[in-house]
Image (cartoon, rainbow, N blue to C red; front, side):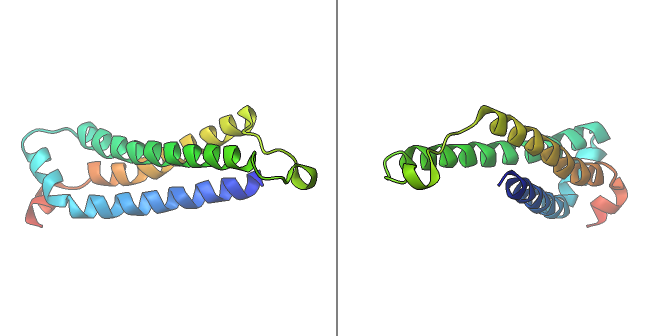
Length: 126
């Protein structure tokens, strides 16, 4: 089950990276203006990287909240004899957060680096 969850997090990271690539493409003019008035590459990198982490934090918060709600709801269904009692394990939560952090870092870094490395003149032309 944990392997399936890891693959799900990986696919989610790819989805977030694609969304951030689209966001970078839509904001090319904004990036050009910011760079033209003195923003450093690190400022642009930080902006898009933090936006990605914010999206992932919100998604993971809702995911853990829904998972906790499902676990609490299953306590009232008489299935303990067949499948046992579902519990939110601390070890699984830590492993999930670790994988989510790695996937989030990778998903945010690639589009942010692309945005930071754009040429100012080319950005302003579009």
